[in-house]
Each structure stands twice: as structure tokens, then as C-alpha cells.
Length: 98
Image (cartoon, rainbow, N blue to C red; front, top):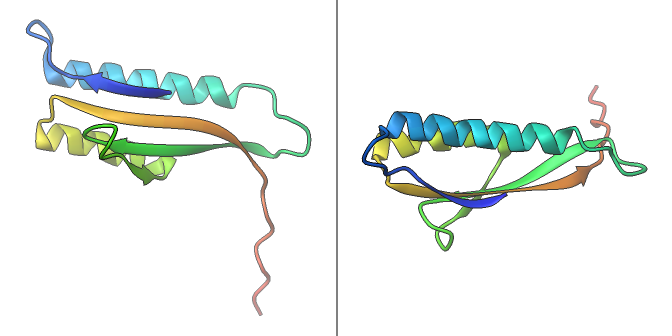
């Protein structure tokens, strides 16, 4: 998903537009996670970028999406760019500490 979400609409409040964006993001992540895994892959990982525009987008972790959306509301932005790309992930064992 590479999308610029526009939050301005004369009939719909910004809170509702942001909730719709959250729902779209959540639905996309859920859809990608439900796809069958390739061989030798443990889970689906995601590369994410967030910014006011596509050019200003910075790399973030999937867990930071919610925080970024709250920032949109605080700054009262009219639009924001979010990029989420699924990639195969392989779990590694944690090193043992004694």
C-alpha cells in the first residue's frame, strides 16, 4: 500500500476521515498477514514509511503507525503519506546470556 490519505472533506469531519484511514490500514495489514507464507519463512514483516508527503516520508516500524496517526490529528494535517510493503520475515534465536 502506497497511498496519500486526504483528510479534507466539507461534509465529513477530520476525526471520521482519520478513522476511515485507520480502518483501511488495519484491513490491508490483516489481508497481507493472511496470505500463504513462502517456504522457509516464519511470518510476514512490513517495511513502513510515513510523512506529510511522499518526498518527506521516513522509515518507521509497524508499531509506530498508530503514534504517527495520532500526530496527524495533533498537527491537524490535511493529508499524509503512508507506505506499507509486506516482506517475508525469518525469526532468529536470541543469544543466550548467562
